[in-house]
Image (tube, rainbow, N blue to C red):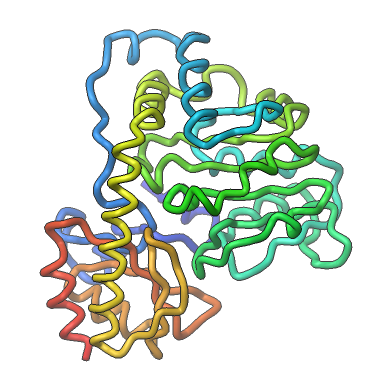
Length: 320
């Protein structure tokens, strides 16, 4: 079966099946460091039979949105829309406004430009009708300031911002024309759950809600999301662990001559000179990394799980 993301022809992390086909082994043999997903996921807990058999009820959505409002400090004047992943929202957002020009500072996550172009928009920095800010940016970790969110339609993609809540621009979500995106899969490590949020202008979110339709989020996702967003202790402990693991990964890479070029505590961007050579050597050890079509020097690595450090250290040593 084809990979839905790769069928678009756009560049993404993941793709272990293709890596295994080229370098051998099965999926279970590989360590996937090509994404920025927390390798120690939130525990999914217990479910009821209704989570699986019943259409999600209003109370389940209200519990989730209430938890989201508290966890992210969402302004009272902002609406919250849960959805089946941030990608589903990104694909629909360009249809909210009249077709015009959109500024999407690059390099960045390429689904935003693809979604706007598919709806007939032109990507341009000149007098944009819309602007997309990935905050912090993927892959270089750049963060943006409040005064840079000034277009009539402004999308602030905070998929990786839960590692540093103090940097969030969520306070802008009560402005007209502003939508802040949150991804549940990155920080909580549950990308397969497909849960994301749009937070912001109630008028725009009402239109967006009509686009995605009723019962867009599954019963299990509603339960897990509400539990996780109410677990502040887990979030705080996770931020500490991610910070320590980031320091450890930077040290390992520095020993092999790599230089930090940016990133967050969920993924690191390194200048390695010949990125393709590094990826190939790691792949021969069945460790998958991320390279980019617009840079021959950049290699991006996610964090390994606790039981994967020794394999990564050995593979990195073999690259010298």
